[in-house]
Each structure stands twice: as structure tokens, then as C-alpha cells.
Image (cartoon, rainbow, N blue to C red; front, side):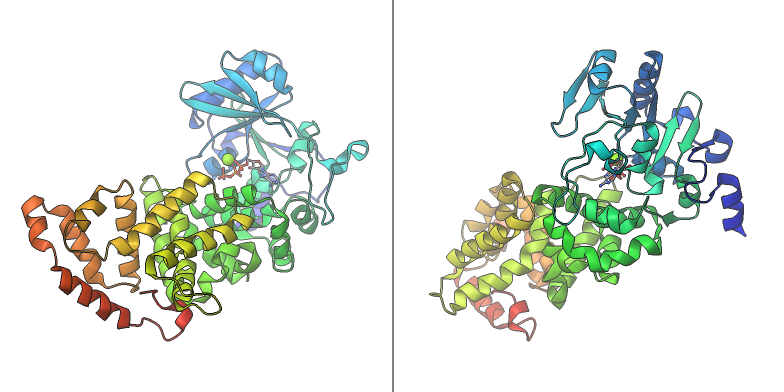
Length: 454
Ligand code: ATP
Ligand code: MG
């Protein structure tokens, strides 16, 4: 009933009918010109005054209709990058493969893109693809209609003109959004082959907007998930970061799993989610991150990746201390070796930047130092630049049951007390040693790969 009504109002003609887009008035979509940021509105108006077509497009229009606050604004136009640049006082052309223009309006930066052609429609200009069909170059200008067709999902192909307050809708995106469906434009298999990152985007956008992935777009993901391996690491890292910091990381990961996608699609989570202790820790970390994102607090990628990889470090740390076919290392050298090995493996899949890798290591390296609660050492730990992140990390470990809750509580108290009270808290050197030994005995899980490396 509702579905029929929505379809009648927003129109879903047979695919490829006239090829003309629906032009939807404000009475039906409800987005007024003052709903968008002033910077994006001024950018569109300036381009239009100079005789060009211009719209706010993509995620911002989608989010506004869905009742969310857009993260950023993209503008699409038929002006070339050079023409765009000349329309504004503060604008610069960026990018090599496909040039876009950053227009600075007050504190906002608006990304302006020239309508892009979908390579299929440019036979003489065919995009280069790799053996699997992944698009390597995609740098042809196109018409407005071409631009809509090369976008991934129908809800992402909406063009809002603030001047007339209309939405130009080539692929029934408004109807799909109202019906809570994430539908791929074109043949999903071909679109995933062109760009496997679209599989991750499908999961992330469905989780963020509460949409159901249309079966035609959902079904092929399982069999195609390994194509993710061909994606350059830096892109995969960006997309993973978006997914994990979307404010819906828990839902995203659950959805990836429900579809059997955490294998291969997310190399990072492969091992971890198979281990009960690892899973509990990762899920707590993700819940924590989601909460912070929703409260508008900053989150650090270093902290996030430190949590995701921690149980791999624990397993490796343990193995290095035991020796196996290598010579056994003592505790701290073994930890540093484990940290390097885990990060090296991930670097091949995800381009974790050097700065973030530094943050991750600082957080990990602090962990054994939290056990030293006698003499001057705890004071030194407090002075560490990454103390706060390391301490938050320790609390997560305690919450997940990996270390004693008492250890986390001790540090909370130590931090909150002042000088004399702190000194009174210090453990005698011997007692702290005994505690350490006692903890070493306490095995958390029977499976040796999941125990703490204590
Ligand atoms: P969000 O900003 O919430 O991450 P978004 O959809 O705006 O989501 P962006 O990366 O900002 O994502 O992309 C802007 C628009 O560009 C999208 O809405 C979509 O139309 C198009 N787009 C982005 N990535 C792809 C892709 N891999 N394939 C096709 N179109 C894409
Ligand atoms: Mg966006």
C-alpha cells in the first residue's frame, strides 16, 4: 500500500523508459534551499550566474532527505575545472587522475566536480580496466545523464538545485530512499568488478541510513568479495576508516558478517572475529567508537587500529616468547618484535600511514608499563604524551576481561589523586612483582592463541 503510493508519487517507470529524469518539486522531497550549507548554496549560485549548470549532488542530498546532517557537500557542474576556478576568488584545482576543484567559502571547502562520463558510454574513450574488470582510469567528461549513470547507488544520484528547489532524479533514487532500499545503478556484478570498494560502500551506506540492500546488489557480494584484494591499500584504508568511524561500526561489522563478508573483505578482522576474546575486545572498542562519534567527540585512527590489531599482537607476542622454531625472546623485545610483524603484514593490505603506525605503537608499548606500579615508574608513565590513549586502551582490555579490572581502577585512582595520595598508592617493589607472577598464571582462555601474553 505505502510502497504503491510512494511509487506513484515519485515514479518508477520501466528501466530505460524515456531516459528523461524525474524533476521532483520541493512539495514532494521537502528540502528547502536553506537546508544546505551557505557555502554550497553560494557555490551553485555563482556557477549558475556564470551560465553553467550546477547542483548539490551525492551524499549530502541523500542525507538531507533521510533526515541526517550531511558531512560535506559536493557540487557537480558542466563547467570544466579551469572554468570553475575562474568563477571564484578562492579556489584551486587538485588531483591528477580526475581533476576536481576545491572552492573555499568561509570555513567551508566545497568539492566541485565536472560531470563525468561512464566509460561504457564512450566507446572510443573506453576506460582502462585490469584483468578483473576493475576500472583503472575513469577520466572522461560527460553529460549530466552520464554523470548520474556512473554513480554507484540510486540514492547517491540525486541532483539538488537550490535555486528552483527541485531534485533531478534519473534513477528513482528518491523513491528508493523513501522505501529504504539501497539499489545499484546498472548491473551490480559489473559495477563491483569495476570498483570492488562499492561492496564496502553498500554495507556502510545501508548501515548508516538504515536501508536494506536490494537482493540484486546484495547477492553477488559473497562470491565477489575476494576482488577487494585488488584494491590499492591506500583506498582500502580510507574506506575502512570511513566504515569504522561512521558512527555505525558495530552494525557495519555485523552486516559484513551476516553476509559472510568479513573474510577477505576485511583482512584486518578476519582472525580477530574468530577468537572469542578478540571479538569481545573489538566489539567493545567499536561500541566505544560509535558512542564517541555520535556524541561528536573526536576519535583517533591510531587508537582504533590499535584495538583492531591488539589480539594479533598478543598471539604473536606469546609465540615469540615461547620461541617455537625461532629463539625465544624476552618479554619486552618480544612485544616490540610482535608489534612490527603485525604492522608489516597489515601494511601490505592497508596503507596505514606512518604517523598512525607511530600512534599505534605508542599505545601498545605503554601496556606493559601499566603493570609497573612501584617506585618512580608510574609517574613516568603519566608523563607520556600518549598516556590518555594508552589508559583508555587499558580500560578496554580490563572491560573485555583480558586483564584484571583492578589494574584499570588503580590507574584511574592514581590519575585522579594528587602528589601525596599518589605516592601512598604505590605498591612495594616486591608485591608488584608477586602480582605480576600471579597474573601470569591466570590463563584467560584454554586456547593458547587467545590467552594474554602475560
Ligand atoms: P559519505 O560522504 O557519507 O561517506 P558519499 O556517498 O557522499 O558518502 P563520497 O565518497 O563523498 O560518499 O562520494 C560522493 C558521491 O560520489 C557519492 O554519493 C556517489 O554518487 C559518488 N561515488 C563515490 N564513490 C563512488 C564509487 N566507488 N563508485 C561510483 N560512484 C561513487
Ligand atoms: Mg560525501
